[in-house]
Length: 196
Image (tube, rainbow, N blue to C red; front, side):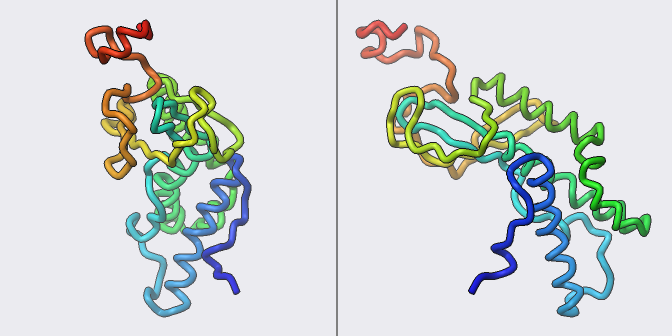
């Protein structure tokens, strides 16, 4: 027997990701009201925060190749904006309008955030994908040592950093992303075998 927490109401496209996040947030609100944990919907953004604003993707622990699916960017963006939208709509007594996800995902601030994150990912030489596929083998080096990896944006979406709880690379001499090392930073075997 499953749980309501196992339900998914949307797909992995932009609207589908937002539907799932909206469903999770609404579940929390209605359960809290039904159980008497709260008497009215709170106007505190923290109450509606559900999930992490980290961006998940894949990373090869052997060569460092990384990829992030666009649906994971939407998870990050929806996790940030939905709590604020809930509070705004409840405060205006217009919560029903939160169901108009086509309008919400096209709001300027949401589009700007999405574009800023995509640009950071591309600037870090991380492959951006559409399709949310499981990565079993690295497409660059064919290693099977691929893991889920997480990143965070900081400084108002001007920097993308690796989250602290990621698995370590096989060797500490690998580049941070898909970029190449400067000649001074290359190991003796990289210089010897001409991978400059």
